[in-house]
Length: 87
Image 1 (tube, rainbow, N blue to C red):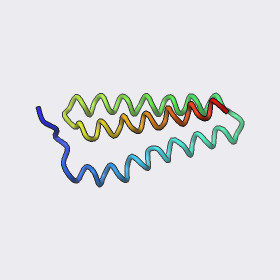
Image 2 (cartoon, rainbow, N blue to C red):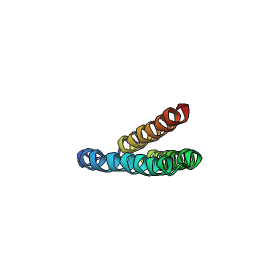
Image 3 (tube, rainbow, N blue to C red):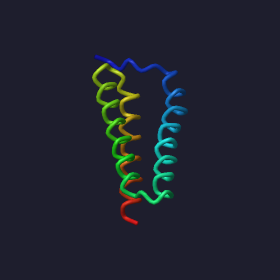
Image 4 (cartoon, helix red, strand yellow):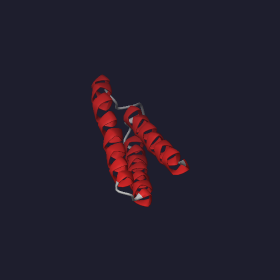
């Protein structure tokens, strides 16, 4: 089965995925500034798991472009959590 993604999906992804990552980072920073580093890591983990779940669902339904974008979001969230944990 071919991909069901349309050219308009790219425009939507450019806005929504950036907003998703920014939302995750802003709340992670709020947790960190409030003195809850564990809460920040849990938040980033939940966001990453949600993105992975969305990617699996999208791949299964044939939206390979959107699913790949969700995988990239999950990777960015995990990378940010790893960098924050390293400090």
